Amino acid sequence: MPPSSSPPLHPRVAIIPARGGSKRLPRKNILPLGGRPVLAHVVGTALASGVFDRVLVSTEDSEIADVAAAAGAEVHQRPAALADDLTGVVEVCLEVLDILARTGAEPAAFCCIYATAFGLRPADLQGGARCLAEGPPDRPDGVMCVSPYNFYPHVALHRTEDGLQPFFPDLLERPRTSLPEMVASNGTFYIARTAAFRAHRTFYLPRLAAFELPAERVVDLDTPADYARAQLLYPLLSRGATPA
Image (cartoon, rainbow, N blue to C red):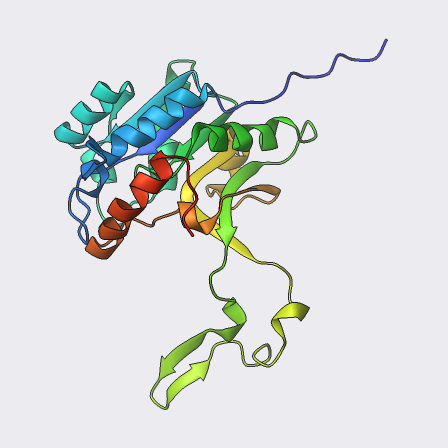
């Protein structure tokens, strides 16, 4: 009698890192956008997707915690030691997973969603979850939300004492049509099998699937100029339009 197949693997927990000490764009996670804090949009999208049993916001900041709770998320009190400029989302997610493991609630897979990813729609998170669930039983290790490169990396220049120099001189003269299509993480969400994430301590896992978003729906919210663009973009996104 053949063994029964394993049920599809889904990321049952969403972790949203949201610290309060952003420097280039202060309080960026809770800036108003369309009448609500940015973080509230992201929490609402995660909940509306129906993918997750739990949506947790990791923060050390009481105001962010209040916004997260009001939006319907669980709040995880982040230690101050993990709220500095040098701590990345990997360390934050590992700390949350450790807490869940101690209570017997660690998921087999999870999703890390950026607190400023206001351009996400519930269908995007559903699509990312399907990428994990519909693969073979032991793969992929994770799913990365990506967008096309705006500029091909082979034309990159770097500054030297002698002026600008090509970073990849051997590739500089190659026509773009001879190079493979390239994408990059767009800073919206990652999905990972927990065991693989713990083993490699990165979202750039060995067997990585892609869920692609149009670049027009992604804003890297780090500067006042980014915020100004977000304010222009949000009305279009809220109507379901794709910016030209």
